[in-house]
Length: 138
Ligand code: 5GP
Ligand code: ZN
Image 1 (cartoon, helix red, strand yellow):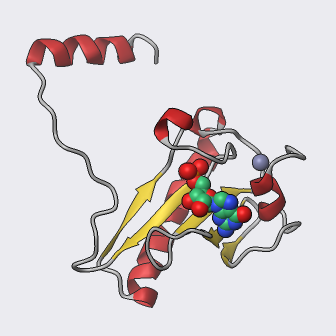
Image 2 (image 1 turned 180 degrees about the horizontal axis):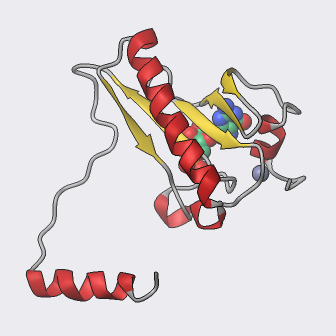
């Protein structure tokens, strides 16, 4: 499954050069061209899925497992103190390349906070109503 107009299909399948940190039959993991932090890595499936909603369960499991392996390797190899796993779905969520990918972003001690939000508030009633709306569609 390929999309001839997709840059990540071309990178994952070696038609466009990239700096790879890992490759197997399902994935290529490459350094991001505009890293949030030194070592910022992207896991690209070799098959084209626009986002997480399209990807098969087995592939998602392997991708998440690989994210953990790469994060552990970053801690050893780059000396980061932790890492964020970020995965954007849809332009409203910041997705700019519509080929499923996972960001693994190293976090260095005393470095800037990469992924953050201001905690809001909710009530038990609102939480129940919101949870029910999601649950009804699963
Ligand atoms: P998104 O915003 O879709 O979650 O993330 C897309 C990411 O891909 C961005 O962090 C961007 O820097 C990276 N990117 C876009 N084009 C290329 C490319 O041609 N090569 C590499 N290595 N990274 C890219
Ligand atoms: Zn693609």
